[in-house]
Length: 207
Image (cartoon, rainbow, N blue to C red):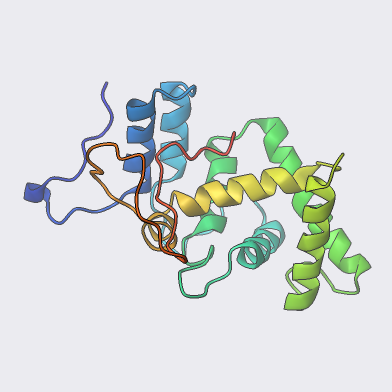
């Protein structure tokens, strides 16, 4: 069965749906993911009302997740992770797409964020000051990506958060530049300092 068709003029103004974008990514690029895997991710990416409860994470871990992605991708001139619903998408991916081993890894990883924050004197990650939160994630980032880095949960957390953000409408169209029908391939384009990168359908971050 072909992917869902993009919005036409008869359906109303062109709009960007994360589910549609992911399904078309698979069709256009012939990615290594199976159709079933892409369908699973697309189902998890379906819109969810802001007042809806969590699907997998308990309230404590979900609060920690929200605080962590907000530090990683804060709002500024463009929307941040919470504006784009990154925390809710990750919760849905864990509920509807992730394997049991990944789910356990995320539960343990988010608990680890809280334990590290407690060692810094906060009740938990979400209760720390912004400086404490930023310093904690910076230490994890330095350890994960240094030569012979420790790896662990943090790199996966960062990859999934970036994937969730840059496949959202806010991430793709405001933090990046998005053209629904880019036309012919042009290998060289003028660049002005400060211009955002172009959205690419192949964003997968080796999930």
